[in-house]
Length: 223
Length: 221
Image (cartoon, rainbow over all chains, first blue to last red; front, side, top):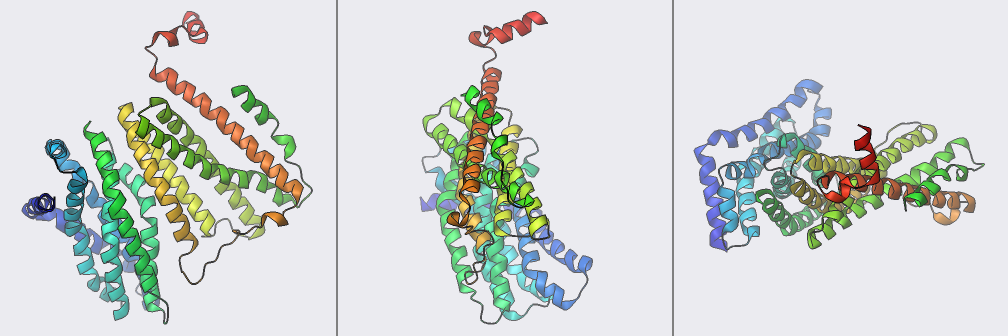
C-alpha cells in the first residue's frame, strides 16, 4: 500500500517537474496577490501589520484553489484516472497520494515563501514563525478539502468557477483559525497553541474523511 | 399532504399577532426561517445519505427539491435579520457569529444547487451533489463553532441564549405556529417540486402521458 502511495506521489512530482511553470504560477500568484494589498491600501506600518494575517491566508486559499483544477483534470482527460481506479489498491491511497503530491507542489512552496511576505509586511519574527506554522498545518487541509471539489467538478462545464463556489465556503474554518493564530502571536500573552491544536484537529479529520469523499466523487465522475 | 400544506399556508397570517414593539414582529418570520434553513439542510443531507446507500432515485429528487426552499429560508432569515439589526442595533450588518454562519449556509446551498445544475447527466448530478451535501453537513457545525468562538478565551455570542423561558408564552406560541406554517409550506413546495421533477424525468413513460392534465394539455394544443 505504501509503495503504491509512494509511486503515485513520485509520478505526480515527476510530471510536475517536467512542467515547472505550473508550480511557479501558483507561487507567483500568491506573491503577487500579497504584494497588491500594500499598493492598494498604502504602506502604513500599523495597517499592514493588522491586515497581514488575513491577507496571507486569503491569498493562500485562492492560490491553492487555482491549482486544484489541475489535480485530476489531466489524468481524467487522457483516461489514466480510469485505469488508476481499477488498480487493486484502495482508491483512498490513490487520492491521498495525489493530494500529497499536490500539496508538495502548491502548499509547501507557499509555506517556504512566507518569511518573504513577513518582511514585506514588516511583521515581527514571532508572527512570521507562527505564520509558517499555521500555513504548514493549514495548507494540507486546503488540499484535502479541495480535492473533494476537484473530483466533483471533473469534466463539468465551467468547472473552475463552480469549484470556487463549492470549496470556498468550506475553507472558512481554516481561514479563521489560521489568521487567528498569526494574530494571537502578535498579542502579548495570547495563546497561539490552542489555535494550532485546533488546526491540527481539522487536519486529522480532513485526512480521515476527505480522501474517502474524494474517492466516492471520483468513482461517480468516471462512471 | 398538498391540501394540508395549503391549509396551513393560508392560516399562517392571522397568527402573527402581538402587542409588542413594532420591530419585534419580525421575529415571527426570522426565527422560524432560521430554524427551517438549518433543518432543511439536514433533511437534504439525510435524503442524500439514503440515496447513496439505497441508490433510490426518489431520495435524490427529494434532496434536490429541498435545496431551493432551504436557500430561500436562509435568505429570508438573513434579510429579516438585517432589518432587525437596523432597528435594534443601528446597523444592517455586523459580523455576528449567527449571521456569518447563516451567510455561509447560504453559500453552501448555492454551491449545492450550482453543482446540481451544472452536470447534465442527472444520475451523476444527483450523486455528486449528494456527496457535496454530506461534506457540507460535516462542515456546518465546524463553521458554526469556528465562527462562534474564534478565540477560545472570549466566547461571545449575541443572541445565543435568548432564554426560552423569558419569552412571553403567546410570542412563543405564535412563533411555534409560524414554524409549523413554514414546515407545511416547505412540505407543500417540496412535494410540488418533486412532482415536477418526476414528471420531467419520466416524461417518456406511459403513465405520465396518461395523466389527465397532460392529456388535456396535449389536446389543447
